[in-house]
Figure 1: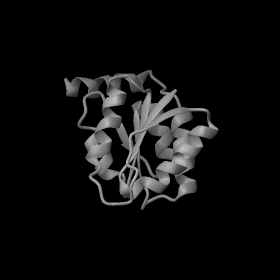
Figure 2: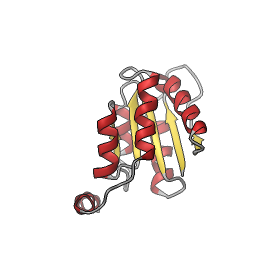
Figure 3: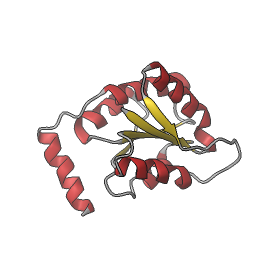
Amino acid sequence: MKVAIGSDHGGMNIKEELKALMDEMNIQYEDVGCTCSESVDYPDYALPVAQKVANNEVDRGILVCGTGIGMSIAANKVKGIRCALAHDTFSAKATREHNDSNILAMGERVVGPGLAREIAKIWLETEFEGGRHAIRVDKITKLEN
């Protein structure tokens, strides 16, 4: 598995925690930024992650900003993206099993580093169940088209 990861200034610390987690899990990743603590615009980092996922350059993506909301809104503007905002482990698992989410968004001001690692680990390890859930995801895809 290969993951694209990005954050704005409000998500830099959690992004670094998640990169360490992926190193521990032997998951390849590509960090699209940001690399500064000065204020930047979250769509500038959500878009490259979403495009890499949509173009099959990577398998999944992770986005972190202050709340995760802006990143998830921006990423979901890209066709083929199912970005889920998750701040608990149940939602992280469910969005993979039921929604086949391909990008995870989190907020650094909402979750701490320990919980962020747990959420990401579960999300990265959980597979899509398919079946009746595939029918629903197909309906979402039809809405895009």
